Every structure is written in structure tokens, then in C-alpha cells.
Amino acid sequence: MIKKHEIYKKDKWNMMTVEVQGRYIVLREISDQWGEETHTFMSRPALMQWAETRFPKEEYEDNMDEWRRVMAAFKGV
Image 1 (cartoon, rainbow, N blue to C red):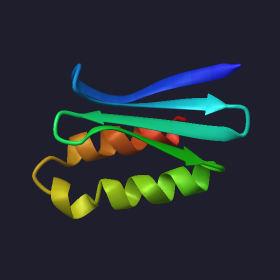
Image 2: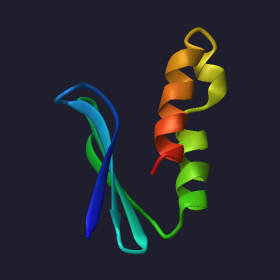
Image 3: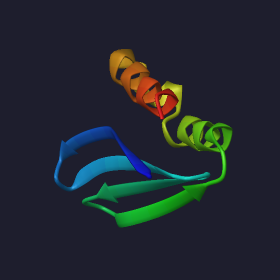
Image 4: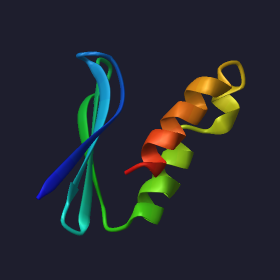
């Protein structure tokens, strides 16, 4: 069974979804600048480590609510 989570979505070109496929976690990141990137993780800690480097807290100092929302969505996977 595949369980799908939507992490964030700004429009149809800037979004991130996570699918839990058995023991694999597949993250699809779609952006208008880079196209689609797919990352596969073997564990939730590996996903969280990637999320913390992809969304550094320092870049969201002006908008901490958005950073907290994104990190909460990753923790909910």
C-alpha cells in the first residue's frame, strides 16, 4: 500500500510530495527552475536529515511559521 503526503504546494509547478512505499520513502520535488527531482530514502531519519539541509532554518528567519509548517509536514510522514 502506498501512502502519499503533500509537504507543500505553491502552484502546480512548485510542490513536493512524499510517498511511503513499504520500507522506501520516495520524495518528488517539482520546481519551475529545476524540473522534477526524485529522492529515495530508506528511513525517516534519513528523510529528516535531507529536509533539514534542504530547508535550513537560517533561510526562514523572516518566516519561521512556514519553516515550522514544512518541518511538521516532514515529521508527519
